[in-house]
Length: 256
Image 1 (cartoon, rainbow, N blue to C red):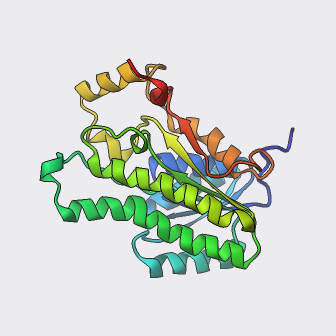
Image 2 (image 1 turned 180 degrees about the vertical axis):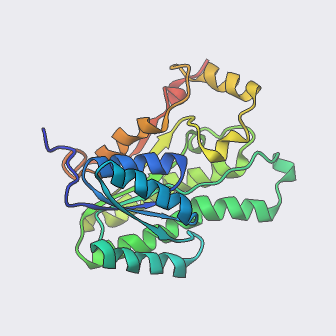
């Protein structure tokens, strides 16, 4: 049991690992021994996360990539391979949101959210899973979904649609990659303090969320570490694939 969550010798790629939630999950992987590549568009922020990981005794390096640009992701994959060899864990945590009312949503905005939240994940899975299979690497892909993926939330139409797509992608790829020893799961976070939801959290919205959350509070980013490390560990979650794991304070179990 003492080695159940030991990730020493593992390499993790954290796409969107420079965000509030992604960085906390990436740090959790590093704290358990994984060498972590922090991948994102904001390289300065990624470097800050790397510095924090290394100051705490971990090993990490920042890499630039835009999830909407395949060439950019391929370049990052090449650079990560040169740095650490192939990877065992892929964390997909990029995301964007908008509170535009349904009848006012323009297709440019719709495309941007769908591209980042769904198309970008598909591209990263194509590129990074293909390399894993090529190198005979078994491992874990962890996608970040949302409570809005199963019961759509008001005010965030496109975001909800994109996250429902993530659930479908996760379960499809779990079946697709199982013969190669790659597990694919998704975490469904509840309400956490993240960049993409701050703009829609007015006082009325917060009160509605608290009424619908049995634990009566927001989650903290650190509370996603445990689930991330569990899904990353081929010892702790070796028979878990295609699962949608809720970390939501009971939000998904609440009715009236």
